[in-house]
Length: 106
Image (tube, rainbow, N blue to C red; front, top):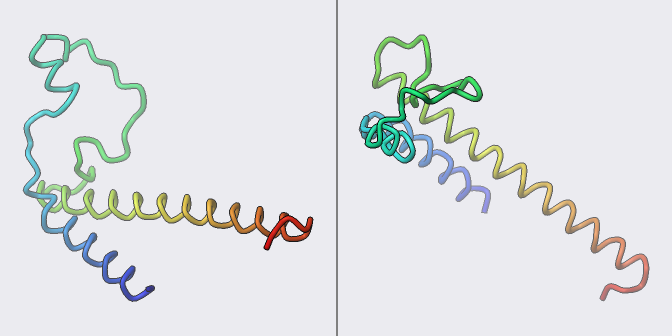
């Protein structure tokens, strides 16, 4: 099972590396609606994004900056998903141990 997870992790990073530069530069979602309806200039940034516009700041080559941002985003997403899975699994195991100790488990 671990071998499959490692292969899928490598595949996700490779896809992020090579597919990210081909992402559309057209505005999406609310940004597009804001442009269409003329309120985009009234927008205020609530928080500063560490990866603004899907590119790592300081990297002059746009395609490389986008690829690196894709890899960072992929790894962060996988880390958060793993963390949530770890917490849920531990919570589930803790609950079953308590039930077994109380005589309610099988």
